[in-house]
Amino acid sequence: MGSGANRDTSTLIKDTFKQAIDSLANDYKGSSLTDIFITVDKESGEVAFYDDEENKIAEIVIFNWVDKVDELSDKKVVSVLREVTEQLDSEDMFSSLDLFKPFSVNYADDNLVVKEELLLISEDSIVKIDNDLMEKFDREFDEFLERLLKD
Image (cartoon, rainbow, N blue to C red; front, side):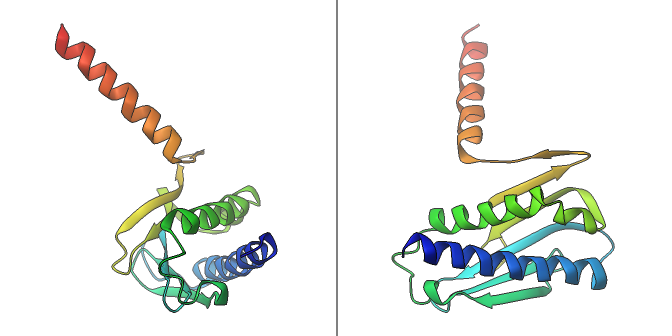
């Protein structure tokens, strides 16, 4: 997959994500929106968006991702989804939604169990979660506990 294919993939996912946001802005039936879940079926290439009531709100088939179970790692999927999510956030697309904070956008499995948090909006601040930050927190916490337990 060349970078052109990646750009096309990102554009397709971004356009579908915008449709999901529009659908939620106009037709959301739940009491308060706290999560958007994104699932990827690596056999069919389907990228689907769900609200926190587990209703599918948008979907698209990414033909570059069809039958890529072995080649398409979760790390690659997360990278593309995070990039798209951050672009939409920088364009202030989530502001059109009636959010209940903390609000998160998550990459999830077929059962909507979160595999990776892509974006977290808490109160009026936005916190982007990435693995490096979490690993740093984890290391610092372990070091803190170790020092605490020595004393």
